[in-house]
Length: 465
Image 1: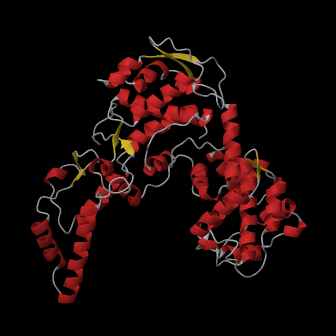
Image 2: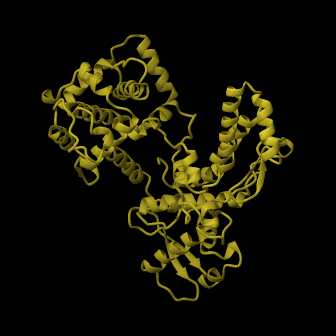
Image 3: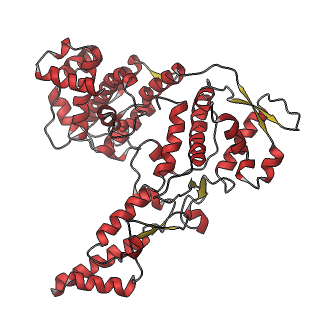
């Protein structure tokens, strides 16, 4: 894909007409120009002329657009308004078996008001749209429809399984994922699932539920029994079609004949093991352990020393969790796993925020938030009294936080160094901001390795996820 990007630049430099490019390269160039417009609100818009030529052909004469109309509408929208408009479109464009048609999209656009005044009634559920002129909303809907139209033509050839920073094209498209309509995502995703499906015979899995009910060791759990028997082939045999079983469950000594009941029961028991202390993979979140705050029933990945490698068997078990997720996506099988939003966001390469961390550990940033507030107060007093910020700040630390050093208490309660020699590096006014940076970085990336292994397992079953 980097070669195709180079080709775009070369062809632009050679001033060859865009109409002479290959269909893929032409659509890719248009998409990139539109992404630049969406992601850069500071620079003047560089609208590609071919975009308007193509829009006339796609939308028809009655809905034709001009650059001036687009720019006027563009000035009314920010990220929040765009998010709400996409949600509005997803709710109102009629789908046929989860796929959209050109006719349904055009019919939807024609139903929208083109008045120059806002319509707070029509958009009552979307606060950011209530004060935008109706004609600008209709224009923005046209823009997103056209954008998704071009995007749908190139997405099947983009590899999104690579991590951020590897593919410039994938990264640019990820940056505007909030602008991609559900129907476009679903249609391409469904095609990918169908293309990579496996119709081989179902594997037999023997479960000793008596041993699992006691589960004195992790190896006795239903999860581990399935893991041992399926992990080597899961990336292939889990690629089932919707409503198919990924394995045939046999309960040892129970004379069971799996017509679906034992299979569903085995999945329920496996999920119960995942969100439990019977396995070393996940732990109840801090809010749940101390019974405060929200999300007390959420389970987070277990924490391992940041300067040590995670054991290979544990890595593979995390990968198997991801493979079970992939199996659930393909077969439409419900998995009762109670994970917090930060896990799902990291799984999708989305940015994790401090609020996501506090949602499972309400006290995680209490100390540094309080110290930052105290530092601000000291600086304010010193500004008024012409005092020495460093001296007063150091006094504050020495009197209140005498034992605070460059370390962090993890979500499991263990203490780790934030920097080499952190246990012996006291915090003072001069290095406090550096401490806060390392602290926040640790907390946001605390589960990064574990979630990466889950993602690897997921991608092995759903390759184009």
